[in-house]
Amino acid sequence: MAASEVLSIRQFYDLLDEALQGVVGGTCWVEGEVSKLTVVRGHCYIDLVDPEDRSKNAGVLGLKCWQSRWTGVERSLAAVGVTLAPGMLIRVRGSVDLYRPRGSVGFIVEEVDVTALLGRLAVERAAIIEALSAEGLLEANGRRPLPMAPLRIGLVASQATEGCKDFLGQLRASPYAFEVLLCPATVQGATAPAELRAALDTLEQVAPPVDLVVMVRGGGAKADLQCFDDAQLARQIAACSIPVWTGLGHTGDEAIADLVAARAHPTPTACGAALVEHVSWAAARLEDAAGRVSEQVARLL
Image (tube, rainbow, N blue to C red; front, top):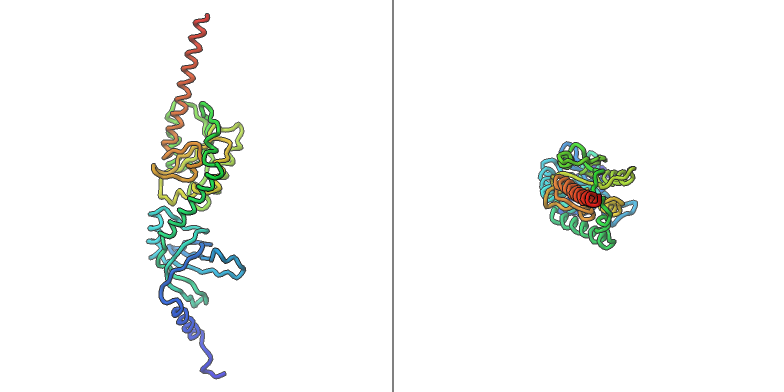
């Protein structure tokens, strides 16, 4: 073999880089499923896989979105209530990246197609609601009997949040002796759906049983409420043997959890006020009944 036919490492990578750029041709769009996402010092790293290729040799494309770009991407996603997470299908525009120190091929992200992502999420949400409706689960929890004066309350919330404080404030300001069993759970983020389901399961098994389960979370970005669109959580609320009331987000927000709950309220404060009003109504009816009994007894005596 002639010396002129032997390539140095640098020459080899120069040729490979040239070939990659020639095939891709600048920037291009790539679509795939997020299998892993991490943010380190403001830079976002995503492993993207082909959702239709589950073979052992399936490729993984490493995406890099530098802080200067990721800040804007994250802001645009938050504005429409989206947080990227494993399992999501995304479409990104960028350029091929040959990282020579590790001999790896990656992809530098310049743009995330928010419109396509929103459309896909809307379709997925509609599919969940359609399935729940077909299974008769949207009204199931609403048929659970509610005690006339529900005073023993199971509360699913994050204790330190304003939403939890707002709900409890309504009860404490009332003249009624509410007993609240708080079962704390994270109300946003990747672990929230599992924690919410676990809290609901705990309260359903409490002895003596609670009269009502209340799930609250204060306002925030729409992305913060994504955990309440979890299909498993919705099915658990629907199947719960105890009535479930919700008070989630701001006025105008509507999570799938709201759709399957016995009663949904626009905010935690509104939920607390509605509960106090219900007990007030029950107290008035009891007082009226007691008055009529007293009159009948007096008449007979």
